[in-house]
Image (cartoon, rainbow, N blue to C red; front, side, top):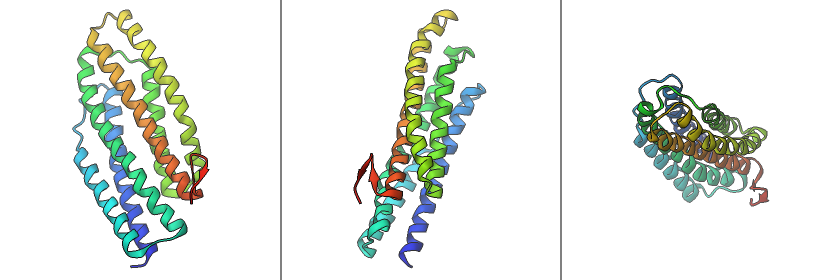
Length: 212
């Protein structure tokens, strides 16, 4: 099998891992928006896909000894799957948190928290598209959006106790709503990290510094 074919197979496995994670995150967000039962997340499936991709990357490097852009792509993939795996962890964290938030929130939604979740989710989906299409301009847009999520996260932290007081909610509301806000902020961070590795794959630059 030629190196191009092997890289294509690895990329398809990365996309499969990505798609699984996106589905888990969307299920968690949907359960919060529509006050549905939090989904059961099989994070082990994402972990298995990560190990498979890492193994394929190592075998390719050892057997094929890729150069230039091929080596850059393998290296970038090896790094970005770590962030995809963390997204799977956070999908599980969010499902757990949403299930525990429901009895305290009594249907109350915090606009900044919901907006934070939606922007973070758009970052994940666009980081997927940027990798799938090799779209570097899109990856740079994802990175910029991380600041938007950070601002919404800080706004949510301020609004959460205000909503607790306004609607006379139990203290547990503050705990679980704050956890939820933090997890979405971390989701955005990992989406931004993935986009940075896509930028590296396409340009050889990582965080503005030329590497390869």
